[in-house]
Amino acid sequence: MSNERGRAGAAAAAGAGPEADGARAARRPLALAAMLFAVSMTFIDQTIVSIAAPDVIDELGLSSSGMQWVVNAYLLSLAAFFALGGRLADILGPRRMAVTGTLLFVVSSVLCGCVPSGSFAQPWLVVFRVTQGLGAALMFPAALAVVVAVFPVARRGRALALFFGLSGALTAIGPLLGGWLTDWTWRAIFWVNVPVAVVALVLTALARIKDVRRPERLDVVGAGLVVVGMGLSVLGLQQASAWGWGSPLTWLCVVGGLAVLALFCRYELTVPDPLIRLAVFRDRAFRADNLVLFFAMLAFVPVFFYASVYAQVSLSASPNQAALFLLYFFAGFGIASQWGGRIVDRQGPRPALKIGCALGAVGFALWAGKMTDLSMHDQWPYAAMAGAGIGFILSPASTDAVNRAIGASYGEVTGITQTVRNFAAAVGMAVFGTVLHHVMTDRVEQSLESHGLSPDTSRSVAQDVAEAVSGHPDGRVPAGDGPVATAMRDSMDAVRLDFAEANQWVFYGMAIALGIGYLWALTHPGGRVTAPGEGDARTADAVSDASTEPPAGPAR
Image (cartoon, rainbow, N blue to C red):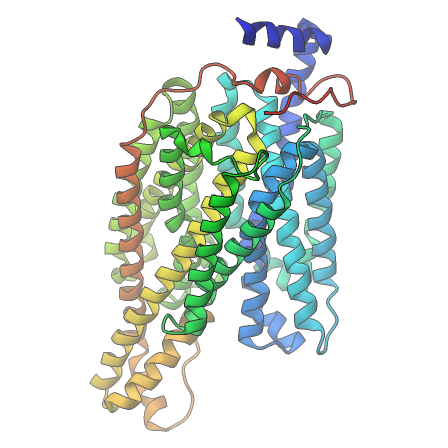
């Protein structure tokens, strides 16, 4: 009864009525479109830079390891600052943080495209890629909080299904757009964000989104701890392929980062206004949502890289053809994400999570089994099945998690779920990268020995081939008349098959990850959130006729 009076009072305070409700409903699509345009930049940027890497290296004279830092700096910053971005969206308001993040992201993009040649090129790019990641970390939780706030609970599943489905599918545009823009200039891969940001900001203004702020203090110590902990652990995972798992530096970063995160969790239990309210993990459904998300993301982000490289190396596809290969995956993903949103609205997330994990596990396993046939045409049904499995998972799990936010703290909960997703992606890239490298090395070594090279020479060359193929794939055949070059030319078909077999192990690993996710999906208590939570009385009028901010609600 008190909740009903609170919602009625909030509506009366805002002058709500049939006409006001109609105006808010009319502007909901504008708000959704604005946030989609904003976050689209962050998804495209995860893949577009890798396509332009050879051109960047040639023009600026960067080393391959230097370029790797340029790619990783963005992902590292994104993972480290997500929790902070979510909390700032609560304290300062999601609209304000979405606009701030968009501006920081697009200014950083322009500066990345304006990088000068010479010795300052690499530090320039790394610094502004870090600020790009910071902008994305501020923007994404705020954007999702806006979408959650402006749509009522009954329609939230479908709205978020559209949000996650379209924004996730935009990742596939990165390689296609990158290949096309690089033909003009690689700098355009950064400048293309400018018109997208302008559209996002204009739509945000037209939607007249109101902010709901919480008068709480920022947990500065907690923010510092989570940034250091996430940054160190993700850095160690990212660099494991370069430094090696036997390197003390790798384990210093990973273990040190996890230790700092453990300290962060302990500290958060002692402060009145923590960065993350760990009590939310007492909710069985929220805990299950995040665990399923973790195992799904072990496959979701790595599949972009490994499927693309497999297509280029084993199937001899061009970069643009490799991008089209990924569209099979996203066709299934896009359809299933919309279907999953409807399931959430009608039955709750548990059925969608179970279907998604089971379908994804089977799809990845069947896809892996077809890889050694070296036929793109034969693989598309299984790629689409794997994509559909992920599509059934991401939107329902994320939607249910934010619906169960403590006191409708959507920014904070979004920061948690996105941190889980990014950390899982880093773990997946590191683990599957190690698997690919070792299996590829063993297979190529055997192939070279069968063509007459000594075991020592075969091992050395196999290591070089594995590193080169997994880092910068191309179809060039070694030149020269020496025994190594001759053996390599004679072994190229076998090497392509070796790489396909190595990828089989990776994709079987993805199937296993989805299988574990299914076990966690079974622990979800089921049910759906059918009524607004504590904060929905304040957020129900987030899109209104007035452009001023409402009074801040009570602290939690």
